[in-house]
Image 1 (cartoon, protein in one colour):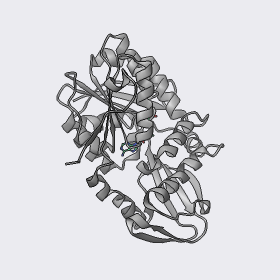
Image 2 (cartoon, helix red, strand yellow; image 1 turned 30 degrees about the horizontal axis):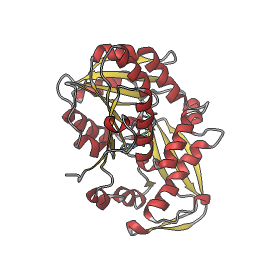
Image 3 (tube, helix red, strand yellow; image 1 turned 90 degrees about the horizontal axis):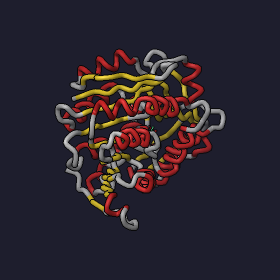
Length: 339
Ligand SMILES: C[S@@+](CC[C@H](N)C(=O)[O-])C[C@H]1O[C@@H](n2cnc3c(N)ncnc32)[C@H](O)[C@@H]1O
């Protein structure tokens, strides 16, 4: 069981009455296991790193910049769907505890809040994010803009937070997972993830999923190799994060960013290619590795889905699709399911 630390965030009333933050990743048990996934990935062949390490404070800021890039269609396309259909989502679910996985800046979530508020439903929000800085800062901004909102923020991994969800004030839950974050999971990780989701949800509860759909590889590769180099900076920042967090010595200048579309596995793969040989130590993890010139680390997969197949998959996981929405180009999809 994770050793939870509950903190009341110190802001002037009335915020302090409406905001609670729990830090799961600050616990001793979490610290004991921290970084074992890195050791596993960097000693494997080919080398990989888990995408969650993109998100320290700087990584979260860079991701916000990515969302604004002309090439990066996912954020604005998903926002388009929410702008057009959030009212239908709220009508369909009725009043619910709103639980968001990987909430980040919660920008698109505002469209859901507006829809639930317009129906006269209370706003109870449980955002979950591994990046505590953006989680708390966004919660404060939301509280300023939504005077009736209550927030219980959970700083930790999806797994940690879902195993320790606070009781809901409302009788039903809607868990939502936007931005195609599901696409970062390998198929077997998806199965584990949904096993946990269906344990947490009671029959009659809801699950809302935003997924990126298959499309022309030129569009996909442009979105992850932007001309301003923001995605490259985001990718390299993962190594800066590891250097800082685990006392490491990755030489960032010796790595080059590249994203390619793998049409067989239907996924974008993001790499850092090593340009010169180097010995890397991560002291806190007691890890030393040698990287050869030309060797690569895969830092992310972003799978692209087919709406029909995804609905069949969700049904098989015990989540019955109720409604599906997409945009005029059919680049992004949103599926509302019921447990
Ligand atoms: C691609 S961003 C999406 C942000 C937002 N949901 C959106 O759609 O724009 C992924 C978010 O999930 C968080 N995240 C990534 N891996 C996580 C994990 N394993 N557990 C909890 N949060 C995670 C990141 O910090 C980041 O805010």
